Image (cartoon, one colour):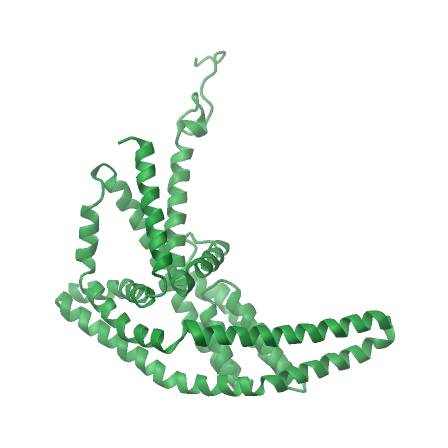
Length: 368
C-alpha cells in the first residue's frame, strides 16, 4: 500500500471518529468519565495484582473504595455548597446595587476633574455593563440547569460511570493486548513507542495536575473561609478545580474573591488578607507543587492546554472538555515525532546534508 493510500485510510478513519463523537456527544459523558476513572486507577490495580490479588478482586475493591470516597465527598460538600450558592443568588441583586453605589461614589470623587459629557458616557457604559453582566449570568445559569447538570444526565453519570469504570478496569490489560494485536506489523513498534510517550505525558499531567488542583481547592476553601469571606468555600473550591487550566483558576478566584470582599468589608485589611490567600497559593503552586508533582517533562504547554480545552468544549461540549487533554497529548507527541523525522530527513538537510545537520562537502572541498 502506498503512502497516499495509508494517509487516505487514516484520514477517513479520523473523520468517521470525529463525526461519531459529534453525533453521540449527548450520551457519551458517563462512558468517557468511566474510561477516565479506569485509566487513573489502572496503575493502583496493577500494583494490587502484583501483591497477589486477582484482577477481579482488585478491581472490585478499588471501584468500591472510589465510590465510597466520591459518595462521602458528595454528601459532605453538596449540601453546604448548595446552601451557599442559593444564598449567593439571593444576595446577588444587593451586591450589584452595592457595586453600583461604590462606582457612583468613585465617579463623584473624580467628577470635578472630568468633563461632564464624558462623565455621562461613563455612567451609561457602567449601567449597560451591569445589565449585560446580570443578563449573561442568568443565561449561563439557565443553560447549566437545562443542559449540563440536568437530572437525567446527573443520574446517568452517577449510575453508568461506575459500571463502565469497573468493566474497563477489570479488562484493561486484555483491551490493550487486543488493540496491540490490530496494529500494522510493519509499524507496530513505532506505534507502541509513541503510545508509551502519550501515556507518560498524559499520566504525568492528569495525576500530577489533578493532585495540585485538589490541594489548591482545599487550601483556597479553608483560607477564604478563615478570612471571613462570605461564600469562601464555593469560591475556593471553584478556583482550585479551575486550576486544572493553567492560570485560569487563580485569575477567576482572585477576581471573584476580591470583588466580593470589596462589597462585604469596609476596611482594607480583610480585603488584603483575601488577596494574600491567592498570592501565597500561587507562590506555593508555582515554586513547589507544580515542579514536584507535575514537572516539566510532560510536554504540554499551558497555551496548548487552554486551546485544547476551549476547542473541545466548543465542538463537543463537556465530553470534548474531558477528551481535550488526551487529544492534546496525542497531537503533541505526534507533532514531536513528525518533527523529529523531518529534522532527520533529506527535506531538512538537503541532498548534500550530513548526518548531524552539517552541510555536506561541496565540489571545491578537499573532502570532495
